[in-house]
Length: 478
View 1 (cartoon, one colour):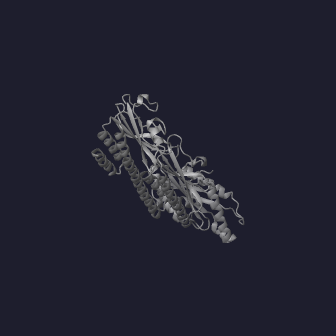
View 2 (cartoon, helix red, strand yellow):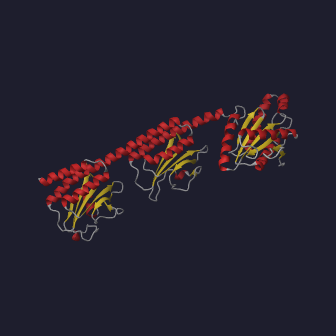
View 3 (tube, rainbow, N blue to C red):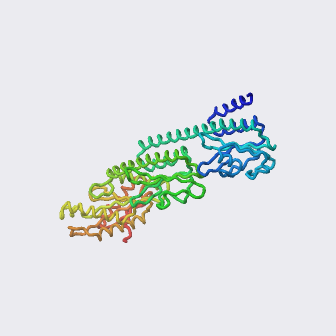
């Protein structure tokens, strides 16, 4: 009875902690100290693979941590499958024994069970044959019952802590979406935050473009594939699980029935995701989808505020802010930026002779020509009246003059219904930093070059002088 009381007190000590590793260590310490064993281990069962793996041990008899014992094999696997203790009084004559230490002579494996479900095995070994008598087996079995409850409590507590951290992360993400309207900033923050609250080592977010392709917009962690921001992800690879030891969960971003993209989370090791993790990540994906949709709505409204109502190109407000951005980028990274100031020649005559509606048609047609002959990164703006401005990122003066000449020729060769006179443009070209280091300086230099182009007879392109020069220079004819 005294031994039972001591065992009871020891079992209560096991139940007093919720830390899984601490529970395992206490279980093995009690087994070693109270039952005077030389070797012992606790194997946990992976329900998905139905294999046992060593999680904690003492002595030197246990299997390496990377060796898995199949359910039903070995003395431990047999005990797990039979759901009852298996005792081998002399392992040298037991074909079920998986030799791990030459001096082991007897082995007792007791399944750790909670609600009739096996969660692991307590494996005890002795250097003496027939070491475990009936009383010891009964006491160890009783202890294993208490230990399995402590083990399960620790796992439940760990799961609750994990779930609480995830709920806190979801709440933080939801709050962030209410104050963050910049989509890129939101995606970057989300990618940074997820690995801190979920068992993921790499996060990537893909959004669909206008053609339906999945484009990588944000990422965090070591890439499982050679991808960089802006890359297109093949649709056939969107919902796959890596076969090289990693585990991938890919969740569609759906808002109001529209598939906006994909949230992909990858672990460095397989079997890291639990069902609750997937559910929590689905909540993150739902929040992200709604935030993406909202950000796009905000962007569309912003675009309307920055668009010219007649031509559909950007307006002067957008030109001013975008030019400042490009100057800042060029100052930091190099590559230059150029500005074209463009004026339609004799536009007043077009309005007077053919009417303002025809004049409006000409402005729209010229805007279309500009968009057709420029890159996607170039910015076309209606500066006011018949004057346009074009921002050419990563473009220097000589190249900008060539672009200006291309536009000049395209306008001169265009067709304009209802207009029986030539439609031409004059262009002034200025660049950063040769013609100024501020927005106003560069625009002023381009304006002066435009004035010189008109003075030279119109339908011309003129380059602004450098800071050391004095007169605008005609650009070479294309």
